[in-house]
Length: 132
Image 1 (cartoon, one colour):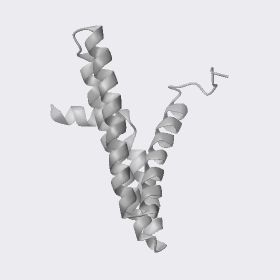
Image 2 (cartoon, helix red, strand yellow):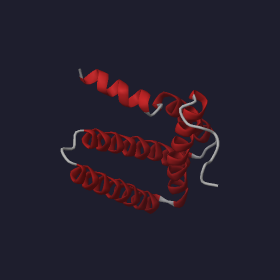
Image 3 (cartoon, rainbow, N blue to C red):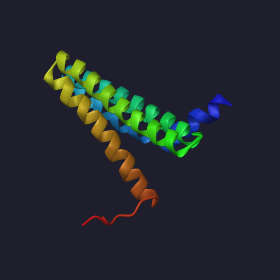
Image 4 (cartoon, rainbow, N blue to C red):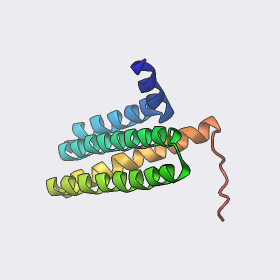
């Protein structure tokens, strides 16, 4: 039963394509002698997957909320907690160095772009921007 939940998480956020892209990028960075950038990218991948896991668990608890007020409070606290986690983790990465910090930020950015592009290709979101 646990295996089905993991597969839902993996397929929901399109993790296989993201891990493929970042693995290739890490290998290229490592082969070019940019070891610290490859380490930063690995840290960014870890942060992105952890952030997605927190988002997934927050969504599950929202679906199981007993009242609207509890759901609103859960969503607010989960958002604050995720941003706090990312900011503290990236602050620790910055202590390692600037190159790993930017590579970690790049790893998180690549994850967001990959997820958005995969949803565009699948047709689950529209291409036009309605806010303009």
